[in-house]
Image 1 (spheres, rainbow, N blue to C red):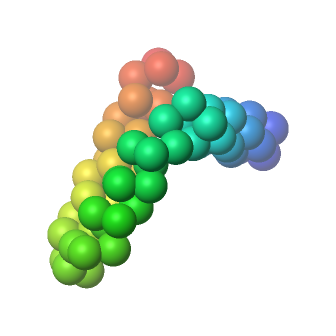
Image 2: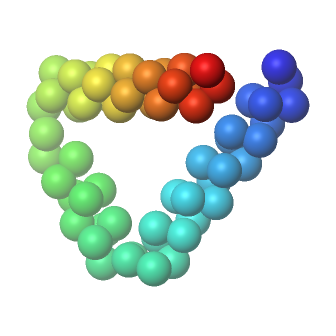
Length: 62
């Protein structure tokens, strides 16, 4: 279980790092957009993203 968590965390860092390396201006604009959003919309997006991640993990693990 902890090994899976470490692998998932590592993959998350690889993907995030690749996004910033490949598309720095796009990521800068995305951050600027988030800074202008109200807290409720940020929370809704975060919960939706977490739910999607859980669904993908559940489907992948069977």
